[in-house]
Length: 322
Image 1 (tube, rainbow, N blue to C red):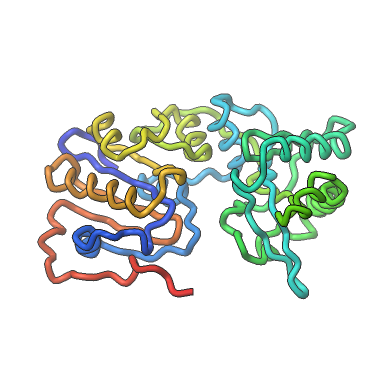
Image 2 (cartoon, helix red, strand yellow; image 1 turned 120 degrees about the horizontal axis):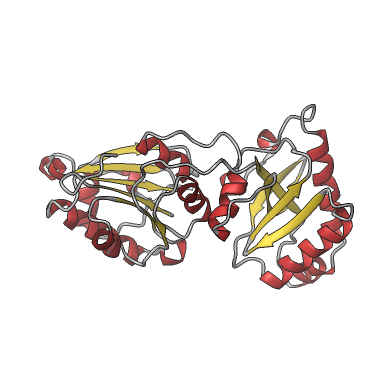
């Protein structure tokens, strides 16, 4: 991604794009670009690094995420251990992601305290909660899944579990975690209110944080801790999502990567951000805009794509049929 004031690019990551654009003029503008379908949900870090021509981290994604949350590089082996609800259906289980609004911080604190007291007594394991995310520290590295829970939401996760012959200790630990969680009063209270229990942790991304380095990357504006952790690891400039694409344009005229906060998501806000990007492209403040959405759409737009007047519609941008 070349970085100069004469040739700036913007990579903008969106929670959703399909069916969210209401302005017909914006739909026409998007349809004039290059539209591609990606397997959903999209690994936004992987796709962003691919666009920047950079290598994806080989391990330590959980440590990177913790780094992004705390600003400090973890010095021990870390795995993500995110709260999930495993729903039994006939002969299979289906994973449901429990997001920040689904489980309160006091509930998570109680559950992780119970796990630490029950399974972390000898010091070889440590269970920690940071915000709505969970982590396991282990004195001995374990084989874990490479797939985040978000990529398995409402799916059978069996194919993403590590192989039993290489990860017997990890699978045994998951069983012990599930037995401990099953016995917690917090889960009984949740079920009495009609809420799903936190009956498992999805363990993934285990490894050590990479050594700090220096890689030229454009400024990042994001609240996503994994993205921020990668930027921290390569000494990139990372700031919080400022609320609008226009603010990113003003702060980084030589180009940027921005992740639109999911708390900011909505049809009107989607249209507003897209209109700001379109106007910046037309005003030659940007050379190229790349949109990446977690629901599987990539749109690449250049300044002169508006002359592709024969492109009038794009089914990929419509609401998916369920």
